[in-house]
Image 1 (cartoon, rainbow, N blue to C red):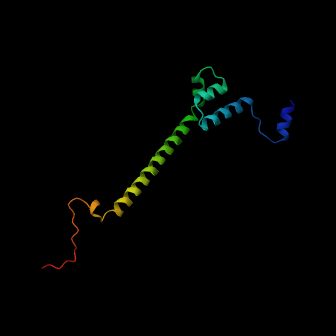
Image 2 (cartoon, one colour):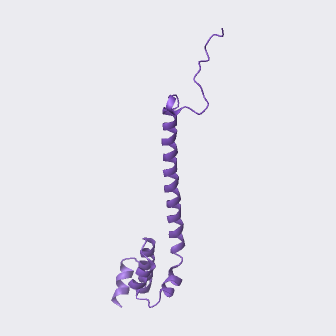
Image 3 (cartoon, one colour):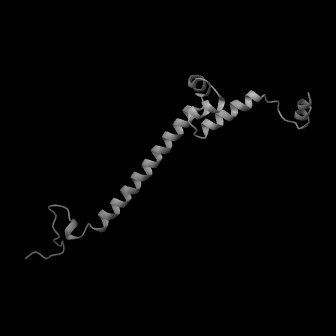
Length: 112
């Protein structure tokens, strides 16, 4: 077999065509492609076969996507809190934004 001599001469591991196919499907799922797309790419007649074979790739993807979503929401919330905090500090002393029931009497007045 001439390909075996080429592989041995190039010091490459022997990889079956099926292994390359499996690797391509795993990478496709890891890249975010839909399971239905991978099913069509592989030519599987039923999506159950594709799902059963490649479910080990999907949970990692879901965990990363969920973590990214949580981090994005946390950054958005932190940004809003900082913005609201700056607004409250900026307008704290003005009559319009004074707390209800508070007065601006000076503490340095001399008692009569």
